[in-house]
Image (cartoon, one colour):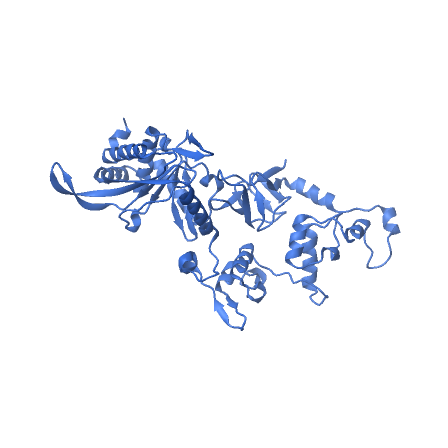
Length: 457
């Protein structure tokens, strides 16, 4: 039985998704849960996994296509179904028809003959591939009644074997990522020496190559850290997809949501003791972020208005508490989500956090890793930041910025005492949360951090 692969919805404002690259080719065997295609959404670039075991078939979108959410982009069919589809796509002729065909090497089947006339049917995918390689589709002899992807690829392979044929297109072996990088950086793939199988051009080859200017001079294209920061990048340099998405979303949030910023300093001595005790009792590596997720989830349960969102001039209270963690990657900022954080133990939160952060840093996030967030934590304490404010991750109503833990002189019982302190900054969408509600949430958060035993009660 065939299973549809559908472009998922990852954000309330998302209407379309962009196919970045197919990780599997049509006709290839796939296993359930195996990454099949990279898709760019309004949140990040994610990998869509195969919903079932079988063969990838009926691919309807090519690399670079914008696809409406909810649209079927491929199907996973059983091996016998794939064979049946392949068999039925081949045009067959009866013995009597064969006898009527012209004798000689140019004899064509009636189906192929009609397909090569102007206006013959061509599949959308075959048309895109032909255009990419500058091939006249009417020069292709199809196996069936219309020109398919396989017919175009077969034609290109034949031309590759006979490069002297007039008007022949060269079939350049290159990975999808290499093609995308070459387009973004303005490089000619035909001038790049490939290091992959059979001389295929890989992404690393494109990054290592230089660009030829009009006067014949080679100019190196910056990669790595310099390529990640648009502010310091030379004019015209491409930025990563994730960085562009982050820029668009933060700009939209900052310009559309009226922000109110609340700051509170909290004594973290009990938080330190709590973590030390957990590390002694458990083999799991619990971090302060894990403890904060647990505490924030408990505080959100007491203040449901903070765990809300603004949509179409309406305030929606979320039943679930799903906390997103802002994670910095080489390509930009992404926000994977810990679902049902208030129902999980600290060790479960630690395990979940480790898994999603690892996937985020490896650019291997799944759609479910980004869906359903209701509140976000951005922790820059590990970078030595004393205090900062964050931009609300719309359509969520609030985001908590966490600074480093630092020893400061504070008054305890009327006497100056050195204590470990953390500065928390709560950014709120004022359409949902006013100052009093935000302050009440921070007060509860401070109480739970300064006395974690309150979590039990």
